[in-house]
Each structure stands twice: as C-alpha cells, then as structure tokens.
Length: 385
Ligand SMILES: Cc1cc2nc3c(=O)[nH]c(=O)nc-3n(C[C@H](O)[C@H](O)[C@H](O)COP(=O)(O)OP(=O)(O)OC[C@H]3O[C@@H](n4cnc5c(N)ncnc54)[C@H](O)[C@@H]3O)c2cc1C
Image (spheres, rainbow, N blue to C red):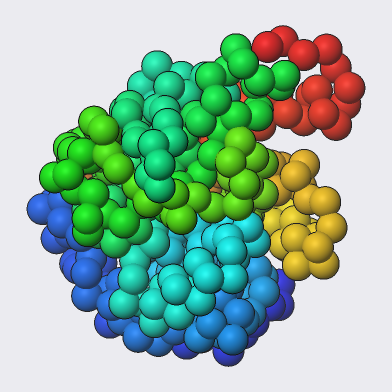
C-alpha cells in the first residue's frame, strides 16, 4: 500500500463522493463529448472547488496540499477533474492581484459556485508557447478596453461565467522587456459572447470542452483590469506554480488508478494456466510504475509545502509537473500492456484514461519547456531561445 497520505478525511470524503460517479458515467460523457454537469455540481455543493478561497469570501481557506488531495482522489477514482479543476485556482490571480472591490464582487460567488471562473485565455495560434508574442490586443478607449485577436485551446469557456484573459496593452517593440506590456482582463462571458466574442468548440481526442475564441472589438469595462496595466505576465506566472502543482497531483491520481487496475487485473487474469501477474515480465513494469509514482508524489508534496510556506517554488513546481506527468504516462502505457487486447476496449476505461493523461505531457506546459527551464534557470546552462 502507498505510504500514509496527507488529509485522510478529505481524501475519504472525496472518494465517497466520486463513488456516485462510476466508470459508466465517465464513459458516457466521453462518448457523447458532454460536460459532467452533475459531478461538477456535486463537487461544488460539497465545497471542494472553493477550498483555496479564504473563509472571509466564503471558501474553506485551506492550503494547496488540501487542494492537491482533492484532485488526486478525483483522478484516482477514474473521474476527470479537468472538467472543473480550474475553478479552484484561476481565482488565485484575482485573490493576489485584484482590487478589494473586485474580490468582494466576485470571490463569494466563485466560492458558492454561482459564478464559474474556470476559463483562462493565454494560448494563441501564432505564438504557441512563446507567450510574450501574443497578438490579442486591448486598447484603451475612455472607460473601456477594446479587445481584438484570437485564442486557441481555451477550455471550459462554454461552462464559465468569467474568463481571465491575457492581452497585450503595449506592443512588444515598445517595451523594454518582452514580458512587460501585457495585462490581465476579467471578461464577463455572459455579456461578451455575441457582442464581440465568438466561441467555437474545438474537437480533440479527449472530452475537454476546449474552444477557439475570436475577439472583434469586444468592449470590456476598464474596471475589469486585474492589477496594473502592463504587469499581467507576472500575475499569470504567479498562478502557474499553483496550477502545475495541482495538475501534478492529478497525474499522481491517474498513475495510482492505472497501477490499481493493473495489479488487480494481473492477479486475476489466467493465461498458460496461471495468473499473468506471476510472470515477472508483468510484475516488474507494475512495480516500476509504482516506484516512479511514489517518487514523483514526494516532489509534488515538496512543491506544495514550499508553496504553502510562501517560499519560491518555481523549479519544484516544474519538476513536480514533469515527474508526475511522466509517472502517469508510464503507468498508462504499462496498464495498457498489462491488459493486452482488453486495454483497447472502451468498456475497460483504460483507453479513455490513457488519452486523458497523455495531455499532461503538453499542457498546461510541455515537457520540453520544463526541461529548458531547469537547464537554464537551475543548472545555469546557456539559453537556447
Ligand atoms: C486539451 C487542451 C486544453 C488546453 N487548455 C488551455 C487553456 O484552457 N488555456 C490556455 O491558455 N491554453 C490551453 N491549452 C494550450 C496548451 O497550454 C498549449 O497547447 C501548450 O502550452 C503548448 O503550446 P502549443 O500547442 O502552441 O505548442 P508549441 O508552442 O507550438 O510547441 C509545439 C511543440 O514544440 C515544443 N517546443 C516549442 N518550442 C520549443 C523549444 N524552444 N525547445 C524545445 N521544444 C520546443 C513544445 O514543447 C511542443 O511539444 C490547452 C491545450 C490542450 C491540448
């Protein structure tokens, strides 16, 4: 069994809630590419999506370790927390950098679930990972910003009331550093869609409710600027540590699900007159995946502890995401192999989880970009870009 885990009561309660949403529920959602509304509502009602919101705004005021425990258990149950994980952490930008008025206006509604802030718009078709080259622009006109541009892969927009959007407010060639001149706007989707914002669903290999966004003269009240104009990139980076650690926790949950399923199947499936799990060719990959997952989990815990202590944790958050995503992907591959042909059938759910966990090699940050960050920022190697 895994070593003792933090937040045992939270984990048990989340596992009980998830038991009401068995494999067949997720299989149906995946097949229909539909949103797990009932599951998200149940998590909201139980208060799990607002654990990071301070009590004064109606949340549970818990730390990142607790949020990690929630997401890990969701994934470990076979569910897909990506449908709503961002409701937990996008508000962090508002909490850390928003005005008192913005916090009072939005956070209580986000905590109760009445307001969904679970869409985050950074990626663009032409800039990709090179965020400082985003082209979506906001120019000030009196009491408004007018937004023009395009975003891609922006998830859960159709299931959100609010969107946190990164835009350029000063052209890249007019700032002393490329990271300056970008700003964060809070977009009220209830007003914006159809009035300068067009949302187009983008079909992918997994059920992720992702979209393309087209901005054509969208007018956003200037009071919806978060923090100071031109400093938005720093605000977004601040939030990325939490996002990476939380998604790493999801990967650990996925890895444990694959390992549980593999162990169970290998012990029961008989071929050549004995359980396949008696063969070391089957046992060892399961044991290796387990060891890899336990090691990655320690890094996730370490990154979370640093974050909760308010200490610098950029490298640890990156390493936690890298190692946990690698562990879940290795466990997914092992699980498919352990199940032979049955792993490919929809009814075993492995192919679905396999597709879902593959995403984390690419999003929210790709493996190569993490390696590049470690190489240059931690090891002092020369920059390649
Ligand atoms: C299902 C899904 C949901 C998503 N949800 C969101 C969302 O809600 N909000 C949002 O803003 N974005 C979202 N994204 C976007 C995601 O964050 C990006 O896809 C990811 O950051 C990579 O950007 P890109 O696709 O433009 O790849 P590119 O930047 O085009 O990179 C392509 C490949 O080249 C590699 N590469 C690029 N430059 C280098 C280099 N210098 N050295 C080595 N390798 C390099 C990358 O690692 C990658 O493997 C989502 C993506 C997906 C698939």
